[in-house]
Length: 124
Picture (spheres, rainbow, N blue to C red):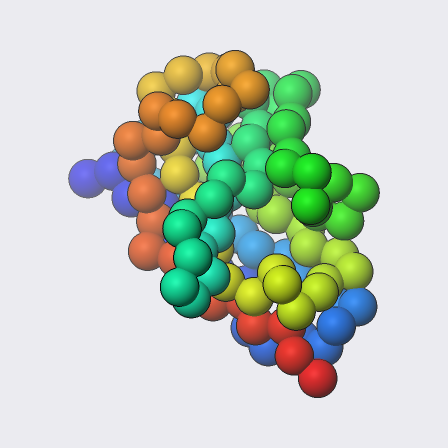
């Protein structure tokens, strides 16, 4: 059974940091591009970042560039999202998703396998 499980969310003050993890089971994550998405209350889900199968290519939405960093440890079958300099507008449920593609291809379309999400709340 293919499964993605996110963890690492929580409550953090503005300017703080978190590390989200996305652990895969039932398939080998290194042959798939993986992306992080988020959905804030009352808003549509949006793509945040993507990393290619090798980890050599990453894409970020403009609002998180220079603050968020995506990485992967294929030996652990896990992908990470490092969130720094958090702002209140980063508050959302964060989801990881895997594509059948190896490359991100500069798009957040075509992600077929999804986790259940982890809540990130940025508040003082």
